[in-house]
Image 1 (cartoon, rainbow, N blue to C red):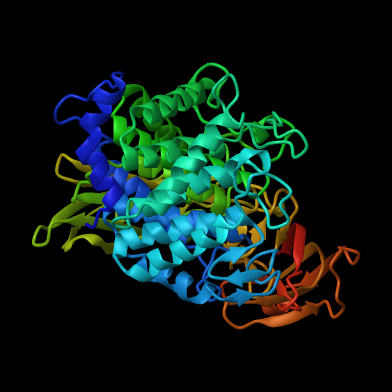
Image 2 (cartoon, rainbow, N blue to C red; image 1 turned 180 degrees about the vertical axis):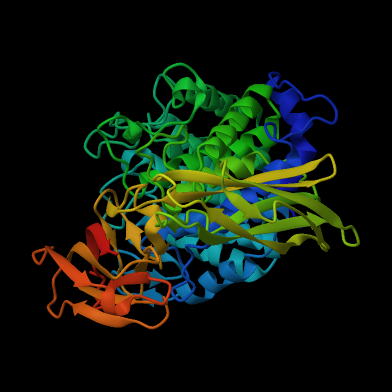
Amino acid sequence: MILRRSRVLRALTAGLASLAVGLVSSLPAGADPGGGADGPTATARARVAADVLMSSYEPVKAWFPSSWWNSAVALQTIGDYTERTGDRRYFPQLDNTFEKAKGVFPAGYLSGDPLLGNFTSRAIDDSEWWALTWIQTYDLTKNPKYLDMAVTIARYVEDYWDDTCGGGVWWDAERTYKNAVTNGLWIRLTAELHNRIPGDKHWLGRAQQGWNWFTGSGLINADGLVNDGLTTSTCKSNNETVWTYNQGLAIGAGLELWRATRNPQLLTTVRRLADSAIGAGGLAPNGVLTESCEAPGKTCDDNQKQFKGIFLRYWMDLTDTTHDRRYLAFQSRQAATVWENRDAAGRLGLRWSGGSSNVVDWRTQASALSALIADVPATPPVRSLSATMTPAQPVVMAASSSATHIKLVARLQATAPAGQRITADVRASAPEGWTVTPRQTTVTLRPKGNAVPVQAEVELDVAIPGGTADGRYPVTVTATSGSLLKFTTQAEILVARSVDFDTGTAAELPWLWDAGGSQSNGVQNRFADGNAYFVYRFPFPSSTTSASTTLTIDNEYVVEVSGDGRQWITVARETQHVHGGENKATRTFDLTPHLGPDKVAYVRISDSFPEEGWGGRLYHLSATYTG
């Protein structure tokens, strides 16, 4: 496994950090530096969550749909995962994005703003996020093209530093706002460049200048928390929301500059920021990191969904550097609560403490993944074993008398030194009265290290008794190898006799067969822009003689139906350029002619004008059948 230079420096200088600050509580010899779950389990959990995240990566545009800077952060999270675990499977996606997205693009193609080339735009902070992503990719690959790109971006950003308010980088090209995120990123970026460019003095000077300005600007309030920005007229803190990512970036900026200078005062400030974040009145009520927009009655936007993951990225840096027990305990608590509150498909939600109204999408997945990555030891175990179920949330519209069968696949992934076998005992369990075949089997995997986990599959036949009541039923698989490797996964089977849900809710997910790059920005709002689409699957009972579906839909939609999910027939298409939802209506479509031999029907929604980006938006769906 390749470790980036800064990680090596952390390991080499951890003792110096203890002496400089005098407050570090060292771990006993042999203790797991990741805390929380044991190393193999933490690695396996992170792998499962990373795979879920990367299932949303769109390879044609080479990003995560609908979000430009968020894509940079998600890819940096995958870089963290790669660095932490040694799993190198996603190198091609990183390079795919670098090569495809470095050009000039009009507004709306990859970003709301025009992209100026080399990952720059009028949004200065967006440019900085991409620079950090490419530095990390350089660390992983040692290919200088990535570091060169980061330098190019930094030179672009440098032009937006001026003497207004005594210094600082502007948030936007219009020079309207100086804020914490842009300047926290600037310090981290310039310090990282210095730590990678032999003989550099320029970027170090910029990092020190940025830190001095940041800590003297008033952005850090009396409680040790970082407010969002400065008022343009008075150059004083605007006392606006303390977002978790601003706090995390300030910690990360100080740590990287400390690695460049070894100035112990930097660690003193970093510790104050960290202690304020997790102390009374900080950012973690009840010990779990919580964004202010998660409060009852509030909603987090797509940007805010990723803030906590950024905090955890730099918190991981803090624990790697100091090994402070309090910081490790906090880090472990985040990973544990994130994992405990995942859904059956391994999706991680906005609210790390869970809840019935939890929002789940690729942004929340990327954010919470950072907590799981932080729980992996800095020197990861080579042996690991994970398992997932496909489909993870299947739907059965069970017959009233006879048993209904459904096929599941348990997929195992393992890593181990080359030449070592992993023999896994695989045991399945189902609710009382159900039958799952096989209940027990043995699988042998032959890993070749930890760079590319090997896979094996076990096919399961699940028989659901006739007359089973509607509800959600777990089928559990536990894979065990020896006394050290054990992983449990679960499929949650929904038995239902009716179809009626709002999009953007947990009730929608079991019916959502293929998200197809679509997005959901809250309740009653799933949409498919450009080449994106989304597909629902309705496995009607074998006795079905007729069926229909009713959609509440608007904007530039195409509605297609299918009996096999492969051959599609268009039943509705919006031919006008509609961007404001003025064509919103409830429309019913007869599915009877399109039922497959197994009485399954598929409904797909896409964009009738893919070049515009105002694709079909679905609010509500229901389906009925007879027979």
